[in-house]
Image (cartoon, rainbow, N blue to C red):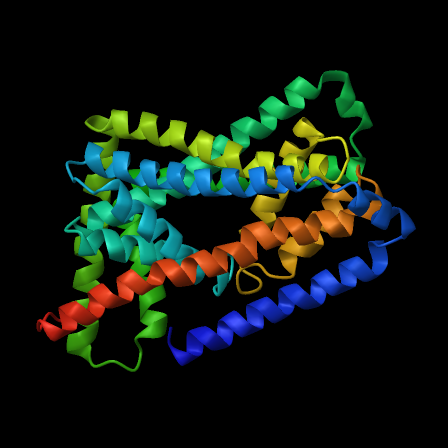
Length: 345
């Protein structure tokens, strides 16, 4: 990692640790220690297993979507790039740094840049669709229990669904109007390239035109000829989020509390959307506060702090460790390419 990346990692971890300490400070009681004495480590181990299963489903999603566009990418390579992107996500706002890593590594595996970009963006769209459908389904299954859901949580759920609908609508509009997308990207890029000379600006705008066309062609191929990739991608997306969302229920059972499957599902959809807002590196601090606030609405206050600490240990600190280990092979490949005289991309 470069020095600037270490700096952002330290800032991100510091945010998280400070908020976790504050959460524990205001939630730990004598009853908390009673719950901890009943702790069943088997459920915590099972939670970690499901988290690693989620990595596998994510890798399979990328593999099958790439295959539907005619590109063979090995499962092991997809799994490595998925795990490596976790580190970039931990040090960038809204975990957005993972997308460029996945696009770059697919491009390194001879997937055209337009196709790689389309795969990664469609991943986000499938996430939004699956989360939206899962949320609606959970509310429907709750039935009469919906009336018992706190109004604050209902309001947050409504806002979250509106955000997802707007995101999907913006995506569909940009796909149907590539020229508008080009003009938008060109205007945005000009804000960042004012110091460049005219020749470099023209080259960059030409690059935008080509890649938007490639991206649009790739999405058209997804819809017209790669529907299988979208179907398998949707299935693996659902399996990915199921594996991730069941973890909190396993943690709750591990500390002797009811799993609250449906309410927990709704709560995590809300938290996932809040974490997409680019406020802090890796959403550190934001994730802890949102989880504490949302779960505090229907879970015993004395265990909310412990729940959030264990949840972040799996979803954040474990991700950092896995991301660092998975980045080593990528760094070795980059150094090998440099030694062989390949240009740095």
